[in-house]
Amino acid sequence: MAPKPLPFPGFTPLSDRVYVRDGHDKMQAMQAMQDSTPDAPTSIIIFGWGDGMPKHVSKYADGYLELFPCARILVVISGTLQASNQGLESRVHAMMPIIDLVFPTPTGSGNGEERILLHVMSNTGGIFAGATVVAYQQRHGAEHRFPHRLIVCDSTPGSLDFASQVGRWSHAMAVGTAKHFPWPVAITQALWYVFLWSNWAWERVRGAEPSGVWATRVLNDHAITLRDAHRLYLYSKEDEIIWWEDLEENVARVRQLGYSADLEMFHGSPHVGHMRMHPEQYWARILSCWNLSSRVE
Image 1 (cartoon, rainbow, N blue to C red):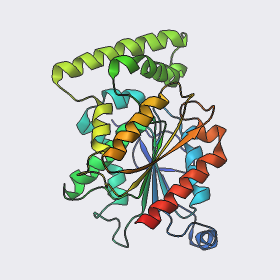
Image 2: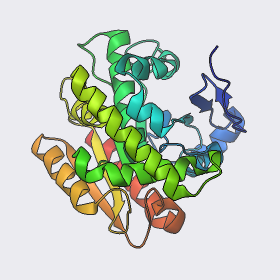
Image 3: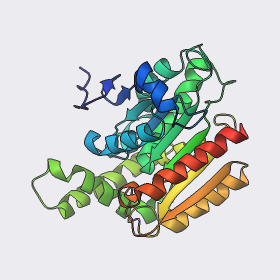
Image 4: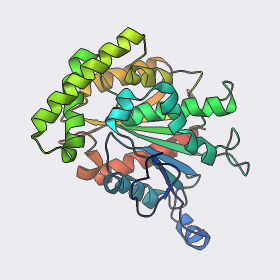
């Protein structure tokens, strides 16, 4: 039996992981469009961080609705365990409801091309963003690349060197799941630490590609993602999980591959905490990058 969707006020579940909220109705939309950005996105897909709760992730949907009141907004809620342990086929299958809703044809609904903005949060969000672009090709064929104009990467990607990062990943998983356990967070982190090492060893035995490595490869593959789509990376030096040096190194590599990428640094904000501490800077940068991506296209 499939898990029940989480309570998510204002959103309609497409599955236990994927939720959708339409923009304003037609009368409201006509008024809103007077102040909205021309050539605004038709659909925005938000990939939440690992174990992010709907009440927290929905704040990002609210922010996008302020910027683009007519956009359809999809939100993906995933657990860190799903990102690290779910098999590739299952990860891709879990994202198919997005493709079936937004892309019944390779370009969209058939009433005009979709204008897509992807918002990716932490490494868990990146893993399921990768699963989504692969799901698109499985549905429509390898000759089609996932059509999007902008990817916003919030606190991702970081280093993919397992040994140097496992402590940070186990800490993130412990914080995200602490409410489920009666003991101190340190014990939960120790359990996750052991689990992650065990899972890494099992992947090595099977010859499986780690999910984070796979996602980075997929999102930087010209045969899967559009090279002329714009990218924006949001980060801080105070991020306790993603080192800023690792993120900048990743962006340099992305640029070498021919992708257009901008960086925006925030001061004093923790992992996926930039919007909460610096909302004006956060949303202004996203809006400016969307406008740039629209002009480039």
